[in-house]
Image 1 (cartoon, rainbow, N blue to C red):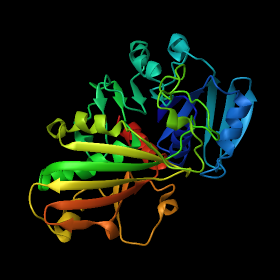
Image 2 (image 1 turned 30 degrees about the vertical axis):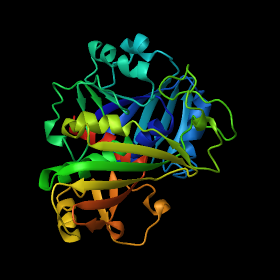
Image 3 (image 1 turned 180 degrees about the horizontal axis):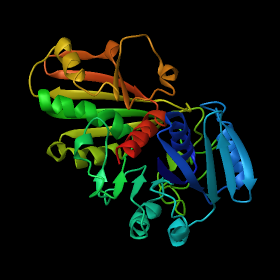
Length: 340
């Protein structure tokens, strides 16, 4: 069984952990986070305001060790609090794959230090263009080479939700232009009340876009999105055919993307659905029911295309998709771990 380490035990790190525990195809043996004590780590693992109580039992068994157990399995986990984990990593020889869930650009840059010290792979749960490979489930699974690709980025949740859809439309129909609007729940670095806010990828720097420092709980906050840069990277042929905007919403989970496309030829709704059915149904779900965002919470899909809201007029197409920006995204991280 693969032995997994997690660096950064925030929202994504904890979600990867829970997903790993439930899927059961690998074992977490190491957690590092310099921003919390071991007691705080145990508390945040046991109780979650989105996903509820952790289904396993959690016990502290030493000053830097915890045990996770249920009736049929036991995980013994070493806990570290290193700010620069790569400097101390020689001692962590039991790890096969490290998941860097810090969201910190400097930590991503240090990924090759782990590989040089004998680690098989590092997975960066963020956009990292210097990685050996950017893995997006349902799009480029077959291009993954675990022997060649040592440092792998899983990009961002918005890319995981939209890239598989856009790739099918490009392949089967053709795309002349694409407008994307994402609605994304608040993130932990935002404020409850108006104040300055630190950047997520570079915590030492303050955000220069001041509206993101406004209260996150009672308003929509328009902002730019890195999704545009990712899609231009994945689909260079669309570089001058993309337009993006995003809104931070006063909700805690489940994002949505609205895609308005100018296609290369006239289509009808039936043909669009047939194209979407070519997507990997384990990763892309097609919904016909009267759902709202909260109904997509803890769904393992990268994207839940809402067929009710498909609108087609000649060459013009509108798509709406939902995605649990934590659980759906982390499900692809676990898929990747299984593939390596």
